[in-house]
Length: 92
Image (cartoon, rainbow, N blue to C red; front, side, top):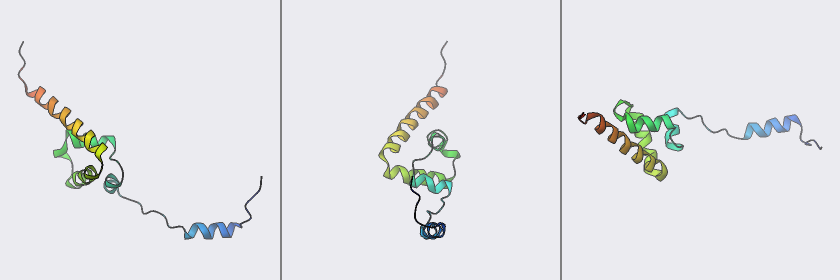
């Protein structure tokens, strides 16, 4: 095994020069990354209960991500089906 020939000071200086990525808020991460499963579930099932900011972020992501758009359409179709099913009269 060979050790690095750089001194500890050189390694520290180099790492100090590397810029770190800014930390994003949870709502900002929705646009840059895929929304989490709970966020997508709430978007499909309880959209009226979500904050406007969250809805805007999810919709911005759906505008650029076909996979998530298909998942949201599928989830919304199923949520609508179950809503209609719950309103249907029961014949015994």
